[in-house]
Length: 553
Image 1 (cartoon, rainbow, N blue to C red):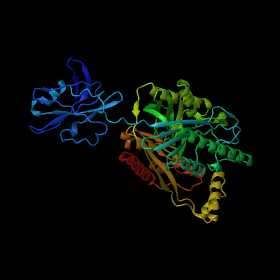
Image 2 (tube, one colour; image 1 turned 90 degrees about the vertical axis):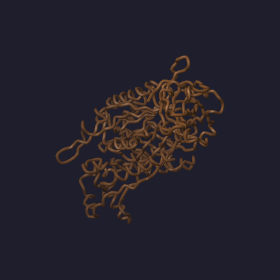
Image 3 (tube, rainbow, N blue to C red; image 1 turned 180 degrees about the vertical axis):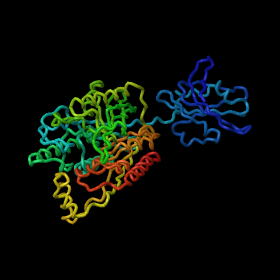
Image 4 (tube, helix red, strand yellow; image 1 turned 45 degrees about the vertical axis):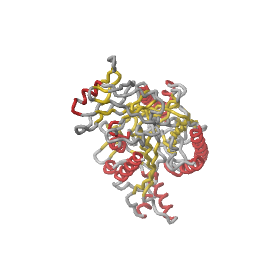
């Protein structure tokens, strides 16, 4: 229950939780008092109730020899940045413990006494770096098979941004936001290995998150068969890819050399332009707008301040495809709505870096969509959701950083016979034909067709205040909704398109329903599928283990 603690002059100092503890006659019992705004002293006794204050230093707190009566009533209180520990001991419990406790002043004047504070949790160190990766010449843009030619102009710059975290324990994590549709294992793995070796980072400590804009350049080894490329197009893609590799390494390096103590705060807003795109027909699942379909409208926000309270960075996320732009604006280079949101936020907070982390919403599209103006409108709505969070009180985030990483094999169903693949190689559908040709080449080399993919997963926890839950691939929204329920007490921030993107990651529901995310998208990724039905069970079980491991440390 709640009670006011009152000083001798009748001034209410604070409100606090009072918890009576059971005790037999003649035993010492205790009450808990916490969260005091100011500290006062009581000496002597009140009737038959002796009040004492036990203080412990930061060095002796963990090993303080507590009696059974002390142990349950030790609590931490705060005064500014200082911490105190107080204990209240009573005699016979038969004299109205709650009434007496509410009239007593429980905590002694320890806030300014030397050697009585529990250790302040060291601040995390944060490093931030940004590089421009806008193409300098016309180049084929990724994401849509329907394009017929390279880009024609640039509307918004493309960026790579790195947000490095370092804990007092030495644990490090670098979150990299990349304005691109996606990166494959073949493209990104050499970059990650070089950075890991250079900075002595453990596996999983470099997380490249693709924004999934469909208006950024095609990359080497990434969905190349999706586009009707000519030799000069390949040359331009190779040139840009090499430049991007260099910029990625440079940005990560710079963020790790920029590490400074920082204060973090979190909150969640809401934006409503994401729309489930799976529409159910009599005999199939089509693209469209499903008003009843699952979506995730949360906008997680993380504010990063320097020790002088200057806002250094604003990190935000959303679970939606970067597919606002098509039609007449099909050949314009753009970061889509997430880039325009960044621009709005940085205009309102001059000198700060706004950084976007894609969520788990691979079966959601922006609504409405079709033009560059739609992207800018959605960017404005998203920026409004972010600034709305920043204008309200936010929850502090601090504590040790704990990262756990794993790769999980997700099995496909058995591939078709060689006869069927040879038939596919003669298909009128150019994409089915290309997949079959690629598969026949593997078989001719004596290799087996892929039986599974290895999907990266990670959980990165900051104290008990925030947990990044990340998966590679194009992750559908069912996982977001399930993880938010399972890990609610861990304060999850869900990240999709993390590390690399091998293909879509469907849920059991979507596998049963079929459609693009379950099966036909695999044609572009070069796989025969679909996945076996147990993939959701495998992923949820493994992610639960990873999140649990961050708690146990």
